Length: 242
Image (cartoon, rainbow, N blue to C red; front, side, top):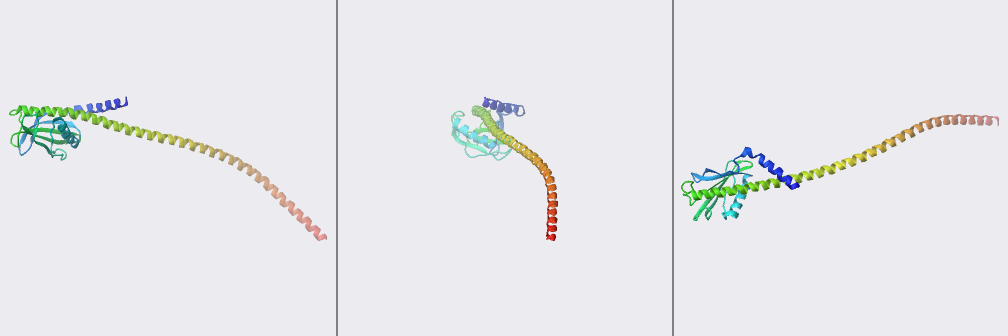
C-alpha cells in the first residue's frame, strides 16, 4: 500500500509538469548540423539529465537493435557530441549497411533532446523525401525510444520518491527517539526538581528549628556564664577567709 502511494505521488508530480513541457516525448521532424551541413533528423525531448539519457540511449539501442554507438558525449547545456555507429547492419532501417548517428543535447538541467539521423555514407544522408523508408524507420526507432525513456523516467521518479520516503522515515524515527529521550529526560529533571524542592523545604524547617534551638542555647550559655562567675566569686571568698 505504501509503495502504491509513493507511485501515485511520483506519477502526480510527473503529470503535473506535463502542461509546461507538452513537447516531451513527441517525435518531430527536424534538422541537425553535422559535417558542415544541415542533415534531416528526427528529434525527441525526454526527462532526465543528458549524461544519463546518453547512457540509456546507447544501452537501449544496443539491446533493442544491436546498434552499437561509439564516441560522443555531452558537452553541457545547448551543446552536443555525436554518437556514431558506422556501416552497421540495421534491418529495421535498411537492407544495406548504414551509418546511424545520434546527438544528445541538454537544453535544460533535467530535459534532454535526442536527435537521430543516418545515411548510407558520409555523403548520402536519409531524407524524408528521397529515402522515406529509411527516414521513417528512424522515426519509428525514435518513437520506441521515447516510450522506453518515458517508462524509465517513471521508474526513476518512483525510485527517487522511495528514497525520499525512506529518508523521511529515518528522520521520523530519529525525531521520535529524540523526542522520547527529551520527554524522559524532562520527567527525570522534574522529579529531581521536586526532590530538591522537598529537600529545600526540609532544610528550611530544620533551619527554623535550629534558629529556635540557637536562641535557647544562647540563654543557656548566658546562664552558665553567670553561674560560673558566681561559683568563682564564692571560691575566691572562701580562699580569702582561709
